[in-house]
Amino acid sequence: MPMSSYILLRGGTLLIHDVDNHVIPTKADILVKDDRIHRIADVIGPPESAIVIDCTDTILAPGFVNTHMHLWQSQQKGIHSDQNLLDYYHSGNMASSLYSPDDVFWGVLAGALEVLDAGTTTVVDHAHMNYSPEHSKEAIRATVASGIRSIFCYSVHPRVATWKPELTMENELLPDWMMSTYRELSSMQPFGSSGRVNLGFAVDTMFAPPQILKDIFTEARALGAHLITSHATQSMQKDIPSTVTVMVENGLLGPDVLLSHANHTSSEELFHLHAHGAHLSSTPISEMQMGHGDPVCLHAGFFDISSIGADSNGICTCYMPTQMQTVLQSTRALNAAERKSQLGPATGPTVEEVYNLGTILGAKAIGMQEEIGSLKVGKKADIVVFDGKSPGMISVAERNPVAAVVLHSSLADIRTVIVDGVVRKDGYSLSKIVIPTDITPLRSQDTDAEGQSIGWEGVARELERSRRSLDMKRKQMVDGNAARRMLIRYFGKAMPDTREQLKSTPR
Image (cartoon, helix red, strand yellow):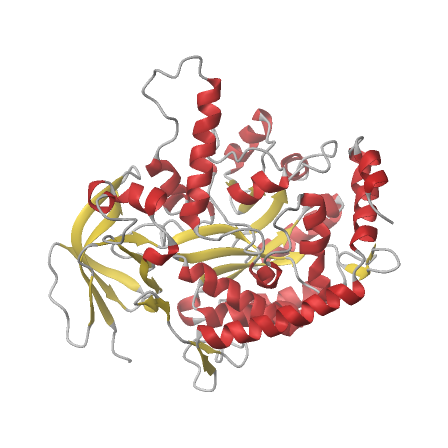
């Protein structure tokens, strides 16, 4: 039997949740044994051979839980800066048709390392780049290599057939290879050391008829999908049945369902979400840019079933406190606008509430609250260490450490990130990783002796090579105006004002 490994984090301020999810800042030591938090006490003597990390003047928080992300889009940064959903749809989502499995690998690896660098230790990856079995297998291999904890949501989605002279889509939404690949992957999961990477499933109800949806949900659940996720947006198709309505009418809603966005959820739909134990993921920055509507995660009735994600690092930052700040202050502003007097004491939602959306409530939303989301003995050792003496954190780190993390921290304040008891970032820099040779159970460990060791600089070189290749493909193959016209015609059935948009789109 291999010897246990220990990490002792000494002398920091721990953000510990009580039974009511209130955060109690506590000066204490944490002892990590293997992949778990083994002990929390005022003073802990280090076991023999333990790694000791001095955490004086730091804040220790549970790793953030990002409940909605498309990790493969790392090569798209800068494309979507001024786009709405219509233009993002063809230049972002549909651009997956340009990606080779190799492009997917480096996009996912870079995206996973980016969120790790920013203190996220668990991510729900809605992986809608599924053009072949190798695309998803390479995405999983990259996820394992990164060291992050992930629910990899294997995706059924519309696929581009041609870009020119017109954008056309493949006729078959669910070819035979798609579910046979999922069956194969299900038989192999979980992936990575200590089973860090589990399979989920992703499908959007607007693209699949009811019987196909029922068949997909039944098989995904039978094969052990940890989570089933779907976009719940109506910003371009307000007259079609909502995702919640479709799921309720077809008996699909359940506690394993996570819906992204859901900005226009009605009170009746909210009732069904609560009744069936489903959860939501708000992505504040992308929702506000793309025109989805106001993020709902801090609204009355939504908070207890909500969580936060970053959506796409191709659109915006994946630093979770920035997402928290955005939704906290926008919700406060909406509440203030509705009040008749500004003389009352309330500002609206609290810093603690939005912090919980990115930690313990995020864990609850994905059914992992007993394993992650808080610093507690017996839980997974997913821990982030913030510098409390940086120019941005000085004073507030001691006075109000939760506010320090949410309102004052930056990515540069993250000194150490631990996932599953393994140090993934230390001294403000990402650690080297080992890329497994494949995803078979014996070789999908991040200690694979035959794997390639690589640091961030090497990953960055490969990502830039991939980005330049994709930019060339985009230039040669994609007619953005033709794509836009097709999408306007498609979505225009539910959008009376799209005729004017179609007139203004160049030919």
